[in-house]
Amino acid sequence: MRDAVVLYINEQRHEVADRHALRSLSDYLRRDCGLVGTKIVCSEGDCGACTVLVGRPAADGATLDYQPVDSCIRFLFQLDGCHVVTVEGLAEPGQLNGVQQAMVDCYGSQCGFCTPGFVMAMTGMLQQSRPQDDEAWRLGLTGNLCRCTGYEQILEAGAAAAEACEADALGKRYAPAEMLAEFASLATDDVEVRARLHDGDHCVAMPATLDAALVFLAKHPEAVIAAGATDLGVRANKSGQLPATILDLNRIADLDFVRHEEDAVVCGARATWATLASELRDAAPEFAAVLDRFGGPQIRAVGTIAGNIANGSPIADSLPFLFITEAAIEATSRDGVRWIPIGEFYHGYKQLELRPGELITAVRIPLPPADDLLKLYKVSRRRDLDISGFTAGIRLRLAGETIQSAWIALGGVGPTVVRAAKAEAFLQGRELSEDAFRAAGEIAVGEVTPISDVRGSAEYRRQLVRNVFLKFFHQTDQQPQIA
Image (tube, rainbow, N blue to C red; front, side, top):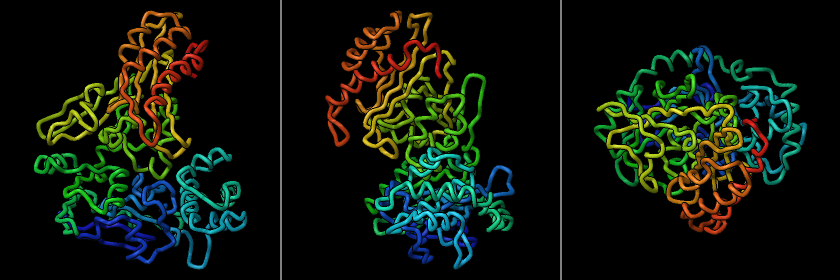
């Protein structure tokens, strides 16, 4: 068993052990490597100034797939078998890459603090595709904030770079063969790092197989599970503390999949939001649209569906869709496998139907028939990169103009997501009409228990419940099926 993490940074090999492996990537880059082009502002994954590109072996085994990542909330122990490229490594010393040159030519930088993050995110976009218009660039840059330049010049720089930059620039700058060979030789190792920090002894296990993970979890049922660790990274930065025992799933390839079945999609616990948005664009367009507003690309590249479910937040963006499609969660332990309906998974605020030693390993999402009416809603103070204050999902099945079945899920109005069972029962058998939905909204208000917090008052959330019923009716009236 290895006790050190092996990664490459700008093609230089690094072997990191002990307490250093428990640090954030941004901290290691700046303090140990002297790569201070990576900037730190929010330490929450909100501003994108710390963006780097992380390359992992692609499915073909011959190339590296580079994704933009917020290095401030990425731990070094999550980067075993990865190649990290920072802004200093985009071009030969003393030269600029195509994106950097476009930012200069288009006056895309003033104070410059956010610029390295923008350059990295834009380079990552050009590695994966060629954005064709401003809207594509805006979506790709929702994880980056600028407070002085203004975005028009940055969008102009993106368009100019798309014309000038060659495809797979990083693959040509960094020949991947040597790195891939070492990554392959290390892929089957189990890794366990032990360290003494200021708050005591810590252990981080990074198994290569699900069996090894289950063995560790059976011995350490108190272990905190890390996959994307976007929430754990923020909490560590703000508190200065880490859980004593962490089980990281990043090296378990068997948990990273999306499988299409005849009437469902089954995804592994490690399936990221970026992968799901791509895979479900046609099969579940409403869900894919919500995922486009799930953090920014740097969060979607690492955040996982199992992490969103296990975090247990009543405003988790994925849950309304999972509730109204009646998804099921696969929980696995050394004792076996069981499937838990999503409606039975939450017993209270962050209280889960998981036994000691059990791990979420997959999620099965039934796909609604094409003629079901389905809408998802997210209310937040900002359109992009913001925590929801209220979420909802409404799904109807009609027989002519009569509502045959209704599924309604409301988030942010109680300690868990609420299935509005009384409103569903009221709508069943009624004609599709504004009066019916107005009445159903009032019934649903009686089923929720919102609180007042920084994102809205309890009364505001009750009004949102009423409003979402009417909005759904007016959006779907006269529409025979989902657009």
